Image 1 (tube, rainbow, N blue to C red):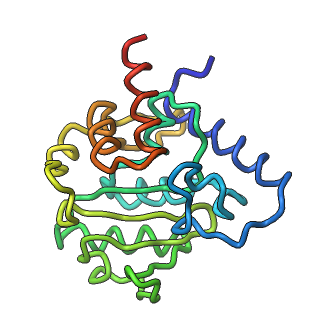
Image 2: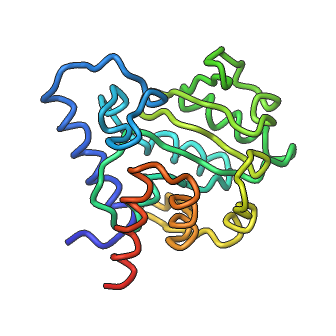
Image 3: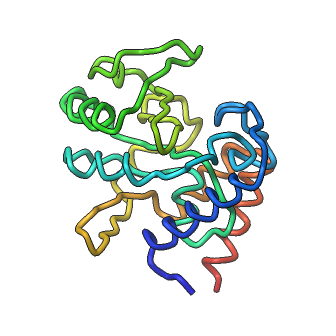
Length: 203
C-alpha cells in the first residue's frame, strides 16, 4: 500500500501511461474530456507525467497549488487522470517566475478560445490559462476566476505541502477543500470523486 502523496502520484502516472499504450489515439485533448470518464479517456494520457512541470515550479520558487484529480490522487483517490490543474495567487509579483517555470518545462499557453499565448508574465494575469507541455496539460487558475461561493484564496492558505526524497516540494489543496470544489462543479465525475474522498476521510 503506497501511503506517500508523491509516490501515489508517480504510481498513478505510470498506470496512466501503461493504459494509454494499449489503446488507439482518441483525437481528444484534455479540454475535450467527458464529464463522466474524465481526461483519462483523452490523448492526454499518452506520456502523462506531471513531474517535469512540478519540478520546474519548485526550481523557480513558485507556490502553485495542485487541484483537480492530481490532488485527489495525492489524497488517495484510485481514479486515474491525464491532466494537471493548478491554482496560484494571481499576484503580478509572482507572474515572472511562473512564466519562467512554464517556459523551462516547454509548456505552451492558450487562452479560453484555444488561441496561443506567449509564455510571458502578462499571460498569467488572466483568471485562467490553459497549457500543454511535454508531460501534462491542464488549467492554471487564479482566485479571480469565477468560483461561485467558494473562497479559493483561503484554499491557498490551507494547502498542504509534501516533500520527496530528492527535495521536491509540491503544494496541493486540502482534502476538505478539494471536496468543496468537486461538489461545487457538480459533474458526474466530480460528485463520484467527492464521495470517494469523503469515504477515504472516514477510514
